[in-house]
Image (cartoon, rainbow, N blue to C red; front, side):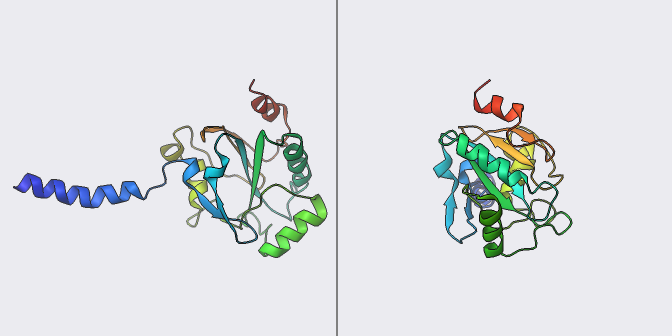
Length: 180
């Protein structure tokens, strides 16, 4: 009787936590800069580059490189930008200001999501997944600055981290896109 009670209690506590935990890349749902829902299940079968962006950073010109890579890799790669204000207040703008800046200055057409936090106590769940081996099953990492890139394969598995100083179209990224 006591064993049955403990099993019931255990299942009431553990199973709901497991059912609602984030288990994989395709489980995420986020909001776009325009406030629309974006479901990561739409990314199944595609390579994905996740980038934390900022409008007032020394790496901001990488928006141009990201857009070029996105256009050249149409159908092979989806680039998703996540504006973040975690580093030296370099992304202070509102969603509409960020959208206008990206479009006017860099012609950005790749998906841009709402502004989030990529580190600290208010880190977005996606970035908790990207930076924790316990969650992504591959590696631990830390978001060190704006324009850090995470590569996700066609099966939703984290492949690599590309740090800010490495351009989006680097030899490493091109090799990954071509399957080498």
